[in-house]
Image (cartoon, rainbow, N blue to C red):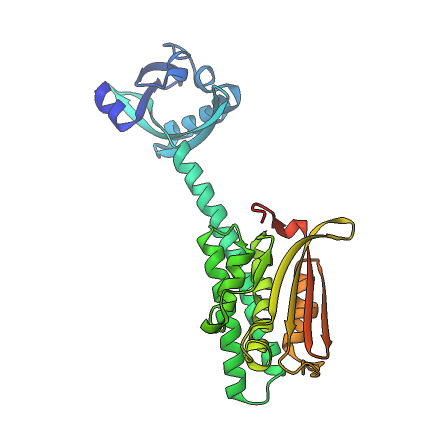
Length: 317
């Protein structure tokens, strides 16, 4: 019997109708050292747990209804969780209590981790849905036809999806700037243009920063592919990341500099365009950062300062 109990990882504890301990089998070492015939639950589990179990077990004796209980014990400086399945038994006409004890520490830990992950997933999903709703609303406000809306909205959703892929692959820890930029560039970068123009510090962005920076890069890249340097051969774009200061604290600055094919042209970002709103307002505010979009003859420049709460520098050039 002892071997069977040991292989099953359970212990048994018998008590008479006064809840005096009479017999135990396969108790864990820290309980076995405390057990003695004639003792009580308080001797095994401590006074607080003992008082709780005493009340519970007397109720089982009275009603005959089996029940379960869980207790947390400090064992060698580590909190362990035990489940007790308590039932009334009859032995030669005398009533008593049988407790089947099993350790459920790892199971409860996994449950807590799973619940935490589910809460985090729910939180992130709600944030993502809010972003999608904002994209849909703002895209609709700044397009004049259904076809135009669908094209722009699908592109922005794909951008969001690309960023989310990187975040998910990292177990929700975020994404490296270079990986994020390459994902956004890939659908639009011409093969003849050589390597993608990404330089400087490959900062690791938080999930929040990765999502919003991905949206900013998408607007810049799509605009360039439609009207700017990528449309003209893509030889005159640089995306550079360097260390900076924001409000007197550590930050990084991401700089997009694009030379337009027509050196006298002032780009047509309109005052009400969603792309301009994303770059100047949505992205910096989402990260408590600062952004500046400069539209001058023959150039598009975008500077985004990101505070240290939204990145880590794990790799340096």
